[in-house]
Length: 123
Image (cartoon, rainbow, N blue to C red; front, side, top):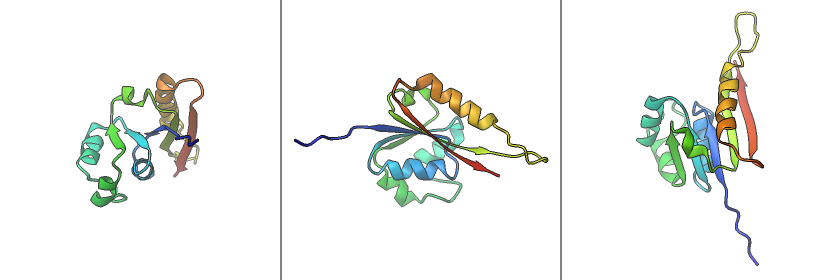
């Protein structure tokens, strides 16, 4: 008997790390790339990455990925990857604002049993 794993991945934060994750996972798994920046989403849906991390051909290979600013698209994901920055101030103290905001977003849509992975870059 063959068991097929069905899963949907949500990537929250589509900066230079998150967009690469969404595109890579989108080659094999249903993937929702979420970012509140509508301009960024429009560019990604046109196959354009202004960070220069993802090429148009890589976007084309990610057939199972969608890019959106609509939080409801994340509702049926089983795995969430939070990929947001953690900038530091002049005293080198971290600003957890982006991390907290992304966590609130995930908390609004996740179901019991969901897996949440945090990938945060410190500047």
